Image 1 (spheres, protein in one colour):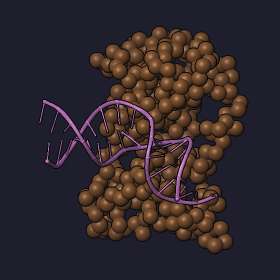
Image 2: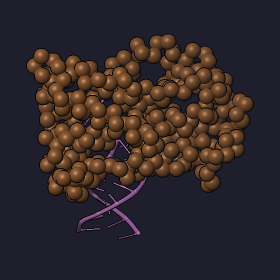
Image 3: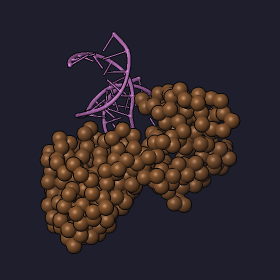
Length: 296
DNA sequence: CCTTGAACCTGGGCGC
DNA sequence: TGCGCCCAGGTTCAAG
């Protein structure tokens, strides 16, 4: 589920509930997700006001009034939903029949404040997600964030920046783009989509997009534009909805209807004038979908 | 340094 | 109906 556009969609869904609210009580329904919760996890969060809900790469960040930040990663299958009491305060997001706790509801943030009582519930069947509490001022130096690459949104991402990091690398382009130290937030779906948009083979050596003098090639500039575009469109569409992904209001995102190559094995390449067929291959243990005809 | 592959965990889909 | 296998949005760690 959660690549950058999905996490950003979750952030926007939770923001009206969390920002300005007080996390009155935290309920852990098990001692660990991917990692054990830190011993002081609950104590550092309870009774704190959430001053801002932000995002870095695929991390959701709830900044607290005590100078700490609650860091949340959704792994492969993590999601949030809003419990009934909070829905009453903001009724547009109300959905029936979802007020019971289920087996994989692992963390409950009970809220209090002018926006009303309520709860935000974290559900994660595979438990690849994790949470931590860190000092807000030390965030960028924290091991989780220190090596993260550039955000693909906004103006920070440039072909020149990428060229610097890709030069001389023989690793397949697909693998290089999944590396969070290069670009933070890209995942399997949007890497496949961006490579198709740019007409570049996922198998091509990453360094082949950089000239000997270190300058980005025209191909790399094209790829940079497609990465920006794919991410921006996915966010505009409310994230993808592969399998079980739901937004915090319970509705499905719909970006999956627009996938050009991801999970489209055997279907004709949608690129105008291309007569190729989408293929699935494995690269470093993950599926890659691409069109061998127009991606070179 | 670089790369690949296994591991973490549950559930859904498919073939038999 | 059931069993066994493969697959899934991510990341980390070990081994070559």
